Length: 255
Image (cartoon, rainbow, N blue to C red; front, top):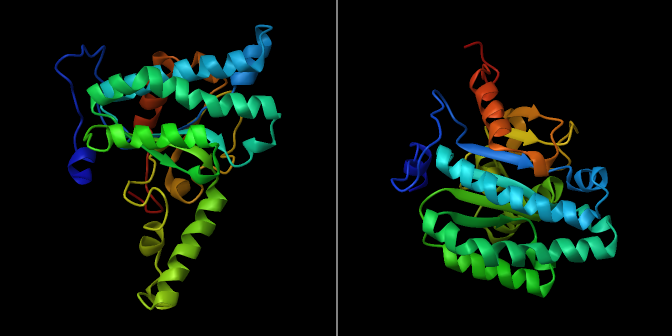
C-alpha cells in the first residue's frame, strides 16, 4: 500500500488546487518548525502566543501539503532537549496536542490523513499520551497522506533504541551480528516503513538539524529560511519546493 501511495500525486475532487507544480515533489518532506518564541517576542507577546500561532500554521501546512499531493510529512514538534525549557512552557506545549487534535481530527479523517508519532511518547504526560492514542485509533484506517509528529523525539535516542532492538534479536537467536546491514538497521527506526526525507526545511534562520532525523537525512536536500514558523505561508512552501525541483541529486554518483 505504501509503495502505491508514494508513487502517485493525489488530487481530491472536492478541493480546488491553486496551482500545479510541474516536476518532482518530495515523497517525504520534513520540517523543523522553529521561531515561535521569536515571533511572539517581536510582537511583545508571551512565548505561549507564539506556540499557539505555530500550531495554527501547522494546521495550514498540513492542508497545503495534502492538496499538493505530498505523500508523507514529518513535523518536529517537541525534541528530547525541549524538556530543558521552563516548566510552564513545557506544560503548555504538552497541552497543545489536545487542542490541536480536538479541533482538527475530523478534517484529518475526512482528508484521509493517517497520523503517526515518532519519539518516546511513553515519557509524555498521561493526558498527552491519551490524545496520542485516540488520534492513532481514529486515523489508523486512513490511506492518504501520512503525517508524522516527532514528539519527544531525538535522532540519537532513536539510533540507540534501534541498536538495542537489533541486539534483542541477536540475543533471542533470530538474527546474528553478520545480519546487520544499513537496510536491516533502518527497519528498526521509527520511520522504517517510510522513505527517507527528500527535503528538510528549517525556519527562523537557524542552519542545523538539532538532532532531527540524523540517520534518515543522510542524503536529504536542505532548505533554510529566515521566515519564522508562524509566518511560513504557502508561498514560502512553494518557493522551497520549486528550489528542491531544481536541485541535482546524484547520491554520490555522477549522473
